Length: 473
Image 1 (cartoon, helix red, strand yellow):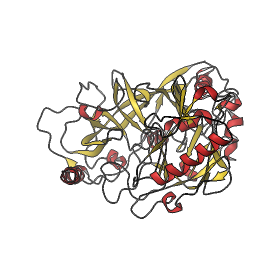
Image 2: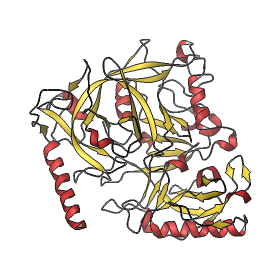
Image 3: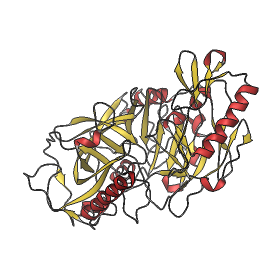
Image 4: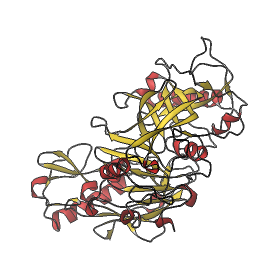
């Protein structure tokens, strides 16, 4: 029965791929800030949904504008929105096959011509189509590619004003999804915001929208409650930015999406990992699992969809056992019954609390460049699951997962993570808590007054578009 189900899924996936892809040409997208000047920074606020542990952002879309809550998908290929619900907008237009806008529809090979109802957003003939996937639940369908104006926030500080102002981005490409795709997403969410390595993702479209370009660098700062995505290189929090540990950004030649075509590379952010240590001692793992093979299996990726880090079973067992030995021996931690999905839990009452969170063994991830290791300390390694229970926040990914190591959201919280596609690297700060910083505080600095002196912000986050922050020099 399982084999039959799998075969049916493969047939449906293949059918989607054969019916929605077609070749198209090039497009330039403009951006219209309300003050007539290009913004130095575009900003997406992020909140953590307590029930699903998803990171949710908000934009406005359409004319008149409608606020949309969207689940953030770091490796997502595109913005997709539920168009089954009434979609009313005077500025919507479908991306017609053969039009310049279709060039941003990566790997498109055919057109939609099967709309038999009254034309409306999500239902036009002679339009480009894409696979739309809910990466949380693993659900896919085909959807019409359309364009509409979106509104995002930018600091008003360059005009000497505190707080934020809205910036309009016309003809922002997205894909129409269906209501059933919302299964498993946070309540009130209307779709997903993809930040992945495609031409239709937020970083790519924002970069193309601003002439003189902010580049494709963006920064992620997630918190236990609030956070932000910043589209531009960071130059504030200089003490944090100067201490980034860089990992090489790798391309997985085989897509890791639920449904994809054979020639499609992964849109997710893979990094080169050389080893994992616990309290400075290397953990013995099968090194081949840390590399991406010809079928696109193995390796390490960063994810906002997975709430906790997921490890291939042999890696998980090795790291968990090493952690338990150190915790019991050097830290006198008392192990108790496990609480799913975690495999190692401890009596919380006997664990000392520091500015980095619980005083527990340090997990280190050593990257292939060998310069320094990214350290995962107590606030990021432990998860409180009860008044007296705290657990190691790692999850067993099974014996043969597609990706060997998935660095999840909890381990990224209160870390500044910089994605520098142009230099093919990802920078991680490690926990900012020890410096008296947090991602909630990061957001506060964006929204408070920062004077603009013509060459950079004195007290805000970023310098001007054409001046990259000091840690890139």
